[in-house]
Length: 612
Image 1: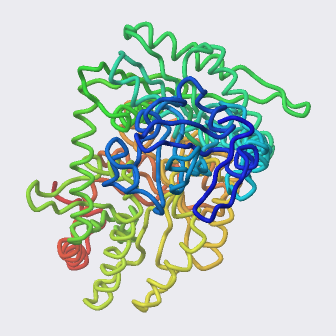
Image 2: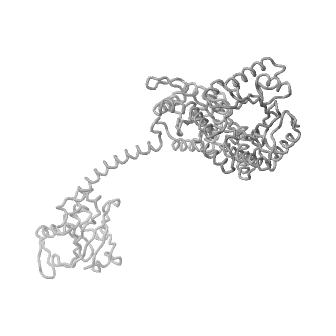
Image 3: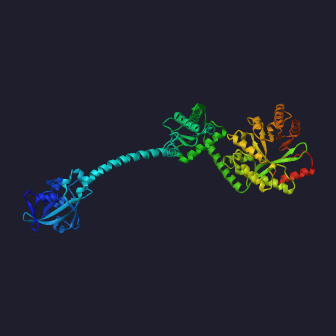
């Protein structure tokens, strides 16, 4: 279209091509044969004159709406209708959609179709690609707002990138916090389990599970800051011994894990574990003090063919750790098939104990305590027995250790105490009163602030007095890490009227200290010092020393495990009058015990020995 050309509509209103180009810069002028004869400046800029002028319109534009419109046959079918088109000769990867209208006009004395177009407002890509400006759009063209919008979007995009960077940094920090222990900076349980799950399917692994010895002692003595220092010392020891490439993690508390990849022999693992224990056991400094902790290690191994889960292999290492601590702290133990079988037996026995507790199968058997000079029954010690429906009568050695490990010992003790107090009450009703009942208590009982109150309630509910109950503790209880609390608990029980007895006197590490610190009334000399005295001068000397020490402090002495009359006579000469042994009377269930008492009372024979 030449600059001087004019277009005249039906109303004979003439406009120059320059004005039309400014008003509708994306227009196309098509003759009645469908050939493009002219185009607006913006259209020429987009497509180019060579690809527009004298080309069929359907090669340049793809008419989307109206759908029935076929520009190759009859373009006039689209006159006066809203058009939707694609620019076919623009890169297909760009948004090339446009909207417009078609009008019939008279150009150069011949009828033509004038197509006025405006690009899609989503045409950001092709606007940027072709370098369009505001001047390339018509004054009524809504797409003209696109350019300032793009500038705004650039600013928003820059802000968005900055915000995304900050969010990514925050996300990384949160992820690290979620997967790492804040104190030691080691990976935590979550990170360990994730890594372990992935490693188990592709590599042989060895898992070293350790926890600290004497950690609570440091916490209690020097404070939690010292405990934190011990944990950091342990983390550094792990890194140093296992190396930076090995995953070292803190499970929580004072438990740590090292994940070692690759095949290792049992000897290599044992040496590695012992090196780790030695490194952790090195002293470290805290606020001028030199502190030391120890460690025990449980080891478990697995290969991809084992198809073990992360939870299972960690459980195996935990089983080995328990065994390492059971046989002696500061060592290492490897989880073996035999150990796993033993664990299955333990689990089955634990379940059976729980069942037995529910069925009231744990009862008290009483073993009499006798005064040798008169033959009188001065009391009876309550000893636990399990009336198992399938295995018969089981003694403590057959289940107590497993019950303690399963956390069921206190429940058993509670059942036995209740059974023993029922026996004490029944004896009063039957007229064969037992003077005193001796009850064994544990560290867990003595560290329970409600224990004394509960025991008094049990007596009150049966109309029994505290003076008829002897609380018996073993000497090793005194050397628990809660010894101060235990001493205070013992003092409170004595103030409530209970009698306190020390069992296995002489077998602990500081028997004399026990006599000084505990409010004792009775000590029981272990059979190691009280049996077979006649043929062993050294044993006699030890027995004489122990009995003398106790009697000088005004304590009653009970000798356990005497085997014959000669033991009794020798101990009587030393000042011991009370005895408890199978020679004098075995542990008996409630009815048998009362029958045995009635027999002795009727016979009225001093030192009447029990059969069996």
